[in-house]
Length: 169
Image (cartoon, one colour):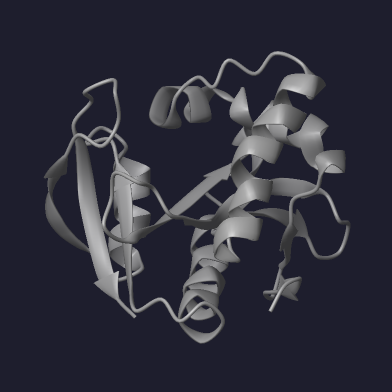
């Protein structure tokens, strides 16, 4: 259960005190390019977004997105977690890192732990992952985790076509 650790990371629930970090993460270039601009401009915006999304998900489903911090220094590096979207059949795995922490294996390391928790703590038997076809690094990570491409989907109002991968746990 949470909080939990990997060899390099502390994985914990977000709190409203994490809003400044969350604001920085959601405004990072790859978040905006591959996940989308959430139009968060202030710490208050980030607090509201956390309340309406992640914190609400903890209450409703028992899981959500989690803060990833370096185990040794407690510096936040990114997020990884699970989300139940109305537009997808399966719970969805997601991840994002601050630019200076991309490409260091934190996405893989945290995703492996989150998938273990999905099965053992949340009794989830199958997990999806969605990404833009142009997000080659995300696709590479999703495939490394053992997900297989299922189909193309348009789960959001923007009509953007995404690749949907899935994995039985």
